[in-house]
Length: 545
Ligand code: 16G
Ligand code: MG
Image 1 (cartoon, rainbow, N blue to C red):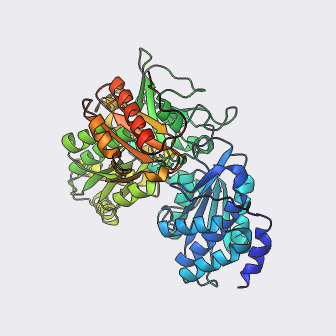
Image 2 (cartoon, rainbow, N blue to C red):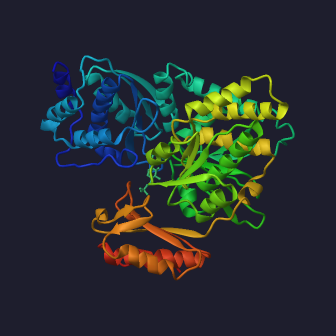
Image 3 (cartoon, protein in one colour):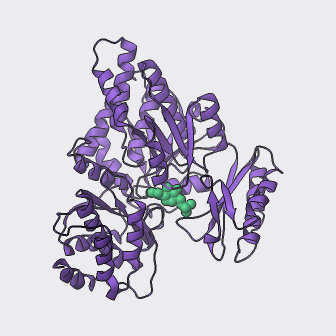
């Protein structure tokens, strides 16, 4: 193969440390940045093969999301802006772990299995976050692409969802939008302005939002976009990266896990605040009340707000479209109960990880998917988009239907359907609150979360835990599920499950119950059962109080 000579030479500049083994996990490769140079080069190679195979542009994003600054990682983006398919995740792992002398054979193997025509052109879009390691690591990706004769476009600093968006735009011949950062702002901001232009009784106070940018790429991009919001949204941006450290005591993951405000922001009682994560594909909202108590509005509350709003608009528009909410086992029991029994929408539960939720949401006319941690978006089927479009252009309908149809049309445009997007989600949520004249307190009061607790347990091999029923039940090791079932019976309104993490070497434990004390006690009881039945290492889990 003519290109192999170049691969061979170039790969010598990005050598793999012998013996190092890494897995393409839930969200790509992710580890200390020092171990990633060869991975990046090889993902450049793999993206080029994927592009030749699909005859479409493929994305490669260099980021480790909410991980500490020292880490980095890489995710591959498929032609419609979705995550790469499981078979290719497998190839990614094979290619990443081939020893230096076996690299060409590993490449050859993929080329043969997928019957790839090497003469086919290849196009790869590359983006990176603000980590100090990202510049050289994204260069390694570009080197990989050029070694196999592919064309690349380096978008430089972009959020993960922006890169997904560019890939989708490119492969839809710009039907989804223009494949530039300016095109992205233009599409989202115009839709936002259209959505909010009739919410004229919105006061300046209501238009104000405090944003914690996690000292990451999201902050930079909010700054770039701000002026196009034409004062319809007043953003006070904190943790903008000018001083603080990426994700350090700030960002969506910190706020969600610690259930407290980030450092580095100024919060006044009752004011609406939100946090992005390090690559701006997650968002969560929060406020403190006049007594100083912290209130978190996570992905479940966001899904509820969005689906309520969409359902109302569909009714007003007289459109018969099926709407569903997709969650994971981490969704608060109160949210599932409210969605199913009060709002009467279809609710689906999938395994953790965006690709699973995304896939399930594609089965409905309108699929709203959110993980409790704040990653999510809304998907509209082609048919649903067409019906909305036709109604918005129909001049024979009454004013109420027309208004609803136009709002739906602009709602479709403000949403980044390729993947969860903190900036797009923020604009959608802000528009909904403005249109409904709703405060964050009113939004929070739609239902009350059940108290919950998440813990982690170290075991010698987390793969001994196998789960079923969208991770809600453990099928191995023997006796674990029975133990969980009997512990859950000791508490009211209780639920608990365990699953091996896809990103860390731990087993995760989730418990919820009527009171915080019960949720804490149950989480600890279940942790102990995991420790004893699944090969715990280190000391036994201790009581929380
Ligand atoms: C990754 C996933 C996220 C999931 C998390 C779970 C993507 C893009 N990200 O960050 O959706 O919630 O992993 O982590 O899929 P865990 O397996 O360690 O609990
Ligand atoms: Mg992220």
